[in-house]
Image (cartoon, rainbow, N blue to C red; front, side, top):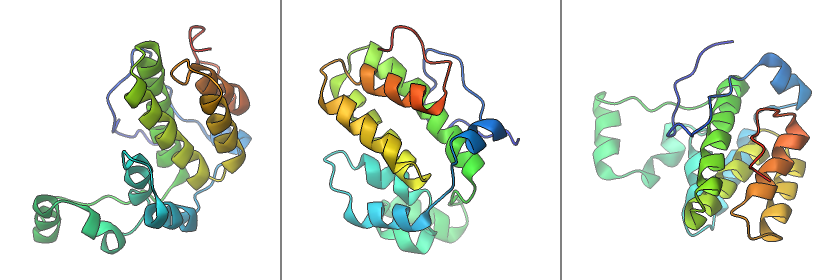
Length: 168
């Protein structure tokens, strides 16, 4: 598998490298129409769902959501817009963000934890696992533990054995 650059802050735990077995076991695939729907109809206060979804769409479809400075850099060639088009990269981003979410839950950072749940839910939907996204939402809404139980449920469902014991 290719090595992908980490796009979020590293969490306190080691990075989990994506494997073909993880992708196959979880039947992950990209659904660009779901990304498009999320991008067009996202309504979370933080803009977290839209932020994840835009990474899967062509620049022309999302450029109006970027600040002028970034658009000018992309259009002049000074910066390059990167669209995620393969499930390996998306899965690695998801796993990286899961590790980051553990840190936010441990630190009891309520707003950051909520934002993390929204982002993870969006990746799950785009990668063809709305069933896991529903469990994530249900567990997050039914507890006041900064998403720990919800994160554990996702890890259990997806076979992410690296999930720390203190995330419950």
